Length: 267
Image 1 (tube, rainbow, N blue to C red):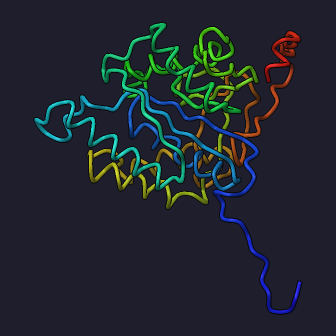
Image 2 (tube, helix red, strand yellow):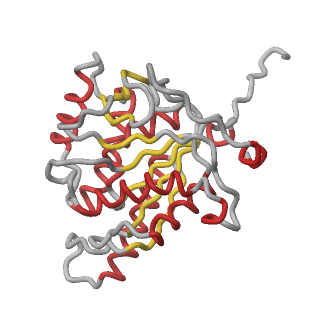
């Protein structure tokens, strides 16, 4: 290279994508619980897509506005959150506070999975504590986990191609969980997490900074991190990681049944 000429580095958004993480949650602001995990995956150069199943139109944070107007405000807020996190954002229009596990809801998410074609999914899991056990959160987790399987079935996602690649699931961790724990080191992304929290605190009153730091410290301290985010690993190994993807192998797990020839041809 001639003297004085600096090598050109492609902007992060144009680098080769090696993994795709789909974060599928119930409401715009749920992603604050995994903001550091999202930022870590983006810092690796990977693609992250955030999908909200509802528009969060039943919140009272905007006063007596009708749900249709609240929905517009929250969709705008979600897209602004996506800009802060440097991710793609998508919304379904399933009903807030009435999220129910139905074939229609599962198919809607399965089509998104077939379109996004993720290498891993983050969603809500089984939970028993306040906030975590919100009915929408519980329904969202079941819908998304079912959709990962349904997305493999051509007749359910047509005209899209089925997504038959194994998609490990990671869920928000409840303190009573017995599933393997995977903790992401989010120490480098603390400022970005708080920037997102500032957005939601100003608009919705959610995202207290002291509560957020306490949560991050508690998750990180068991692994020697200053800040961490812990999730349940449903099909992969647990432990301390820099990013969720590529996933840790599950020790002692039985191998997956091999795809049938026609499924291999469709990949």
